[in-house]
Length: 384
Image (cartoon, rainbow, N blue to C red; front, side):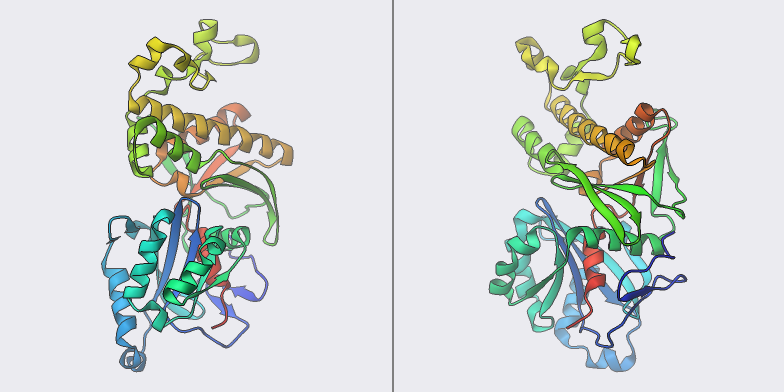
């Protein structure tokens, strides 16, 4: 889809998405890209597969150990995970063919990650790690002090778009939408042809939310955002239910019923509010039932988690819709780690975009949500 696009100082091949740098210098392996967010850190590791016999003989034992450790495990300690289902084989980066591995861990566990990097001897092989996100600034001193690694920092939004471009070019099944999102028996993921993408909105849902309007390969602007994002959902769930992880919060939400917590239109009007086309089952007041002592006593942790998820998702959808209307844009692409293992929010967003726009807005999603920044900054790095 995006194979016709070109970025400054870089040529994207239309046939295989290869990256050819203007500079002849190629940094030593291993190659890493990191997106250090407020809640989750994402690490992309490029494993070359076109190693010559001479290179194999010359490859130091430390690099072999790092390669084996990263590629033979799907879990690292208690909190690090490699998303094996997202692995991309036979991709070309800087003229080398190999595999992209996608790894994530809570940003709160950064000290553990740095200790692991030190124990594996990473700093003996590489002096610089490509990084983006707020944590690239927050933890820069930690990287230097603990493992003698420098962070080459790149703009978060530039990296996001560049990473999306590259992955979309190399994965024909990247973009999709949900059909019949509110009907469990008929809901399904459908591939979407994004070959003529412009203009479109990117709604990047991390700890908070940023909304970008993209008009061309080098033309975009941040038009809005909200502090109520994935970090808000997790923080409120931890307070309300005692859960300790995003996965646990989503699992609780999947078993809950927000209508026991939220006040609906029909709870106020006794049915639909027909004058303005408001269906009786729409949320009129998030957590509106919780001012009743009797109602509070009857709700479960699952109900509270589900209501929290619906509240945050509806708010994001409402802001995204207004931005799309203001910019006269019909395609809205939702990305970010808030959507990982979270089909509830994806389907809510899909339904909301379609319902409130009377079918004129399309909510789109991408398989590698959350990892685009890490890929983008990895592609940016051209020096040693």
